[in-house]
Amino acid sequence: MDPLYQEHILEHYKHPHNRGLMEGFDVKKKGENISCGDDLTLYLKWNLAAQAGGDTLLDISFEGFGCAISQSGASMLTDKVKGMMRADIAKLTEKDMYELYGTVISPQREKCALLALSTLHSAL
Amino acid sequence: MPLDTLKIKKEFPPIPDGVYLDSAATSLTPLAVMDAELEYYTDFRANVHRGFFKEAVRATERYEEVRKRVAAFIHADPEEIIFTSGATESSNMFVRMIDESAVVAGERMEILSTVMEHHAGLVPLQQFARRRGLPLRLIPMKGVALDYEEGAQMITKKTALLSVMLASNVSGAINDVHLLAGLAHREGAIVVVDATAAAGHIPIDVQQLGCDALYFSGHKMFAPTGVGVLFVKRELLEKLSPSVFGGHMISHVGEQVSEWAEIPSRFEAGTKNIAGVIGLGAAIDFLERHDVNEIHGHVKELVTYAVIELEKIPGVTVIAEKDPEKNIGIVSFVCAWAHPHDVAEILARDNVAVRPGHHCAILLHAALRIPASTRASFHLYNSKNDVDMLVESVKKACAIFTQ
View 1 (cartoon, rainbow over the protein chains, first blue to last red):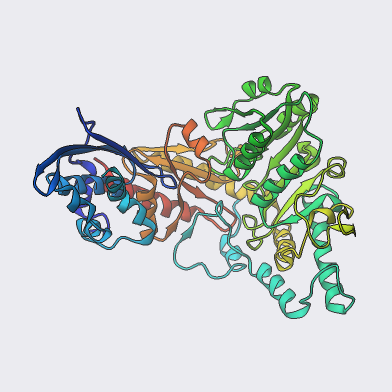
View 2: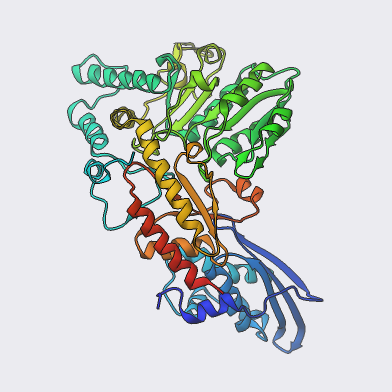
């Protein structure tokens, strides 16, 4: 087993979750890593202030192309944040993202691994 | 004829277990080049063109000898050779020199280049065009080669400057610069050539190419990093204003106004990379000892073999000039299911050094409708065995990502 391309990462890359254009989204946000050619667009649908604590993310999807790390990250992150509150999503850190991968990400691949999270944060 | 790579490898520091297929990013450095640099630092460390002591005299002599060596290497005169920090500085400086002078004026209102260019050639032109409010037009590609029919149409009396690369740093394609320069000169345009990818792979003859200016870096042709060359034909160079000012480049300094030295000093302000220049001289010695034509002959066989073997792998598409005569020694490729970064990562596990990405040629990739590619580039120290290791590793990468 390759240390980086573990089964769950490849599975998310080959059969991504939450992939595709969303009908009736509230927010659309594009992110890219120019140097790699990774390209990601997130679609978010909010349930505005449904709970006392604030907005809840009702649905999220993504489109794009890029390396297995950036694309599997989008699949795993969208799974994780669906149903979360806006304030909690804002608190997600790089460490949370690396935990989804479950492996050490080399400095050369950090941008790939963090593309989904940084795009999501800029969409909040 | 294949070269004796085992023997050649002895002229370099030991290459750890693995295969170096990234010479298009930077070549390995021969021991002789390092020795030449070290000799400067240990035996005659002094600034050039200044002191009277023996080390200063020797440093100046060696520095100026390299100018003659470079001139001979590209069939120019020593006065036409300007030392720079590399191709990027050469390109920026040349465009600034043109901008500061009155050579682009009047009816000539267009800048012409190609979609194939490296960003080091393209972006300074974009900035120049924007400053002057001139249109920048780009000759398209037909496959991986330039579209010469379209190019011929685009070269007109309006063309002020044509900037074209001698060979692509992505597809390896050698461009017919002689043809384009002839057309551009018939219309009175200035022609500048980016020979960075080509230098060290094919002979460079500025007379045969018929260009007005040409530049390249040292570090892709066995010289140290941080040194490069800008050649400008004397007739043009004498009309150009300097773009960098300081010591050495003046003939007279007054309180308000200064006057410039003769060419090429006028364009070499400050202390240049003396050790780098001396290393460049040793790199040219190395290239001439091995003969650039022999090197290309060797590399051509690797290109042919790599194209055949890579194309056998299901899902792999080769992005390269497939006629080895017209390829400097680069085979880029894409895998249907694997992004170049993932391919390069798997290859790195097998110690196969390649480069993934857009290779500073985003417009070339856009024209081919791919976001990025993986590039394998060859030089005289590579062997067929290296290609075999590349191919095995690419097969592995493709297998991991096959849907």
